[in-house]
Image 1 (spheres, rainbow, N blue to C red):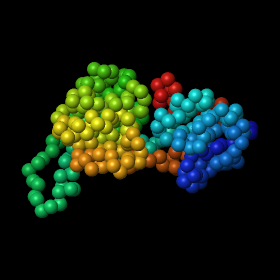
Image 2: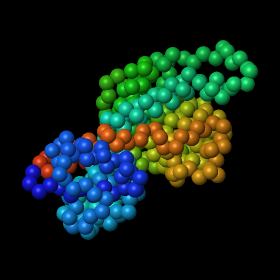
Image 3: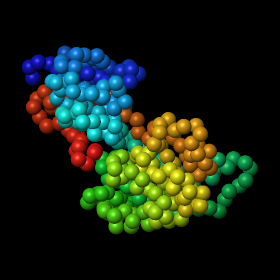
Image 4: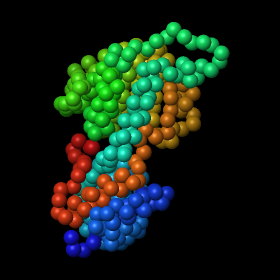
Length: 314
């Protein structure tokens, strides 16, 4: 390394307070403590952008020296198709984010598996005995999406002895988990999933993957857990399936519009649990180390990690 890089932090102002110290610490640990880390810089001087897609930086054309854009989020759907972005784009793949997602998913799958809501919300003097759930080995769980997060969740659920089937658009292999792919595999996975976890990216090929037709393939009364992306589900079709009893409950952490508008019917529906996009927050400490590792690699002439495939969109 010769000239130390200029790193632009481009995100909402409150994020700077969360990330400045962890990023500076990670830079120091990587031998880059003298690098310039700023929230404002002349575009032609910037080597790397630490980026949130909702930042003010939307036109990358002026950044003529830019080597890479390092996304703060796992999701890249709001930047991957930006035609002004012509340098490598790295998504956030962070052990802390993965661990948080596994914890959230396993918690809600267990909640639905055990029928905990009947007792949590039924504090009305009624002794609700005699309803015994199956053991985990007899509960069929499906996971749509077998990337880093989906694979980790499938492994964790298998470790709890659930009968897990995972689906992806292309063939994948996960120890202990039955995997399927393609249209036939999707139909088979849906047909057996008493609890379904959605961890697909938001792409044209995954939008509305749960719709009136595919929801009808699921076992009657199945539960849906969506910490993936809001557009994976046709909202109106889900509400109709909930009203008919085809779907027993939906726990939703992500939505087409966020925050979820107060008048949206999900809020008042008795068979919907809304959580405010908290399934797995990026942790500044661990995320900063991931970002700085890519900066170090860029400065040392090594390939970047976790690059986005622009054609696939993730």
